[in-house]
Length: 510
Image 1: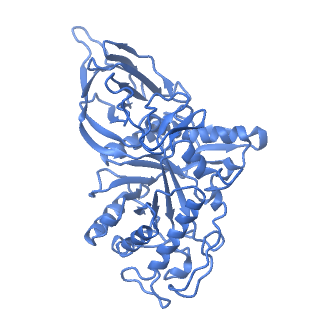
Image 2: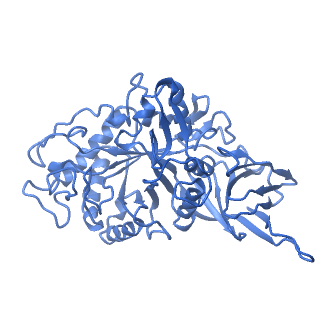
Image 3: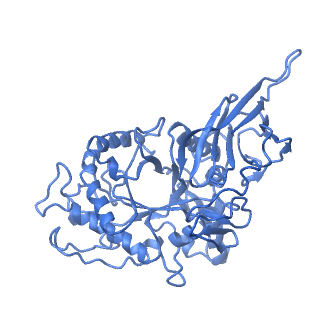
């Protein structure tokens, strides 16, 4: 199946000249990576402001993060596995790697689990799952200090026993693997399945907060041990590595892991984008996630486009595109989702207190929404060819058969678009630019299976199209969305799951 998009560039007419015409073809037969989703973290208790907010404001913040009609429709939540003695599940040294550890209750795990009403009602993890999050990813910034060469959970240090690093107390690799399995089992006891677990965070850095050093070869000497411990515990959680601070470092780590024969034990490759952004794919057979990136320094901003600053919405739309297309990422995550009095490091900020609390979405959140609302988990990026100047085009096919085409017009002129192959039976378009405060329906003309519309200047426009042969034929997998206010996808769940209502905005296959 292919869809042809005819774009008429907004150039000035001159005597005897007509506007140039560019044809963009979307080809569903050409496929690239599977999309796992988009997400954020509430590590270090950043989400406590939402947890403690009045009910109306709490609901608004959650909707901003997870709703596919009111918010970004995020589908990945990244949790932190704490290592500090005051909040880890193993605060005390058992005496040796082979000694029986004493684990503490996971408690509320800095609001990442948090029982707020009953044993069946958790806060971030439970609400995230109920509102459409498909993947919960837990990542350990460090092992407990007594398992490391420096004896501390901060300031770097290596896990005792990895390649080239030994401790007088012994080899703690198996003990660390058991510790992470205990964390997974604790979450499972709360009704939360952790889909992926990582054991490093920015392992190039020794910081004054949780940190542990490693290179790819050292990571490879632990990965099979962790994989086996998870398997032996009867869990299905996949192992990830390595959440490097920058893309270039992760390229090197991945090659070292492959050279050591440990890639087979991993489920995902993970990287941050701080010291270097991705410009091309990592050489691996695994799906790759960008798991943390944000504007850490600038003020919180609701500006879509002004000068192309780091905290503007259009800037982040182009970065997401760069990740999905240039690097073939399967997931793109921001650092913080929602927090009180946030700067640009958060996508949503809460200001004030009590009933006067204000919940505000950044323009960066709406940049995510232009992708994550419409490109759902297990979608596949498909081929496109041709594009006008100043316009980036990417297309994706959802499991329900719908085609999502995202166009980013970075130019100062609007462009008329004719999208169609004569086969579209339904179509919607949404846009984000300086004239609107959140994604808004764009006026289109559907006639004879083709769609006509105009791309505003400095905008993102997302088209969702389907044909009669696709409508209603898809089967939604476990945890997938199958209904809710504004839902237009399939309502049929794969056996043995059924479509259950979580709230008016979201039903999922459980």
